[in-house]
Image 1 (cartoon, one colour):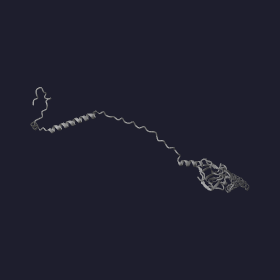
Image 2: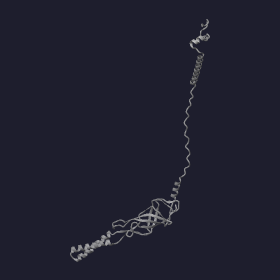
Image 3: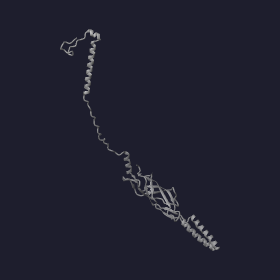
Image 4: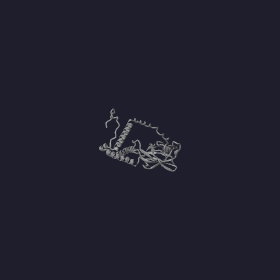
Length: 267
């Protein structure tokens, strides 16, 4: 229909379609309802989108790293039981390097004694540990073994040889191993005199002298003189080659140095 004069077609009220129009174009009222619902949903989604996009983003600043706290207090240190026991043992022992003096009870002679034999010496003076308790009392017997023993082979030799090894010390009737070095032992060299071996040298010299004297002079007198001269020469040789024995008298003081600690008996 035409709009009345003076009225804009946009402002004219909508005229509902006739049944003929709707049937000819397949129009249904439910289509208008569906389109209205779709438009409403679209408008609502747009509003939601705008609202979400327009909201300012909330930025949470990162928390600062935690500062390390003070280290836990250490418990008061206490010495272990082993260290305490070791300290107590050291206080009741003679330390390595301790000097021991002992009086030899036997005599030693390179003519009479031999390697492997034992001799005895007695400790002179009490030996006390750092805590003041006596570890080795005066008079405690030491057992020693002859390791080397040789006489001076001749008069030109400066000395013979004597070496002792410390084996044990006895306290209260019980023997304890002793690790100690025995220092050089005071001794003397004593000539044996003319032994059977040296007499043979004298006799050989005399015989040689007699033969030489008889050959040279052709007379008995020359042989006798030669024998005397030969004997004298043999005696000189015997004296020069005679052995001198190493002699150690009883009560000679021996000096020993401990190589390892000695703990008193009962510890």
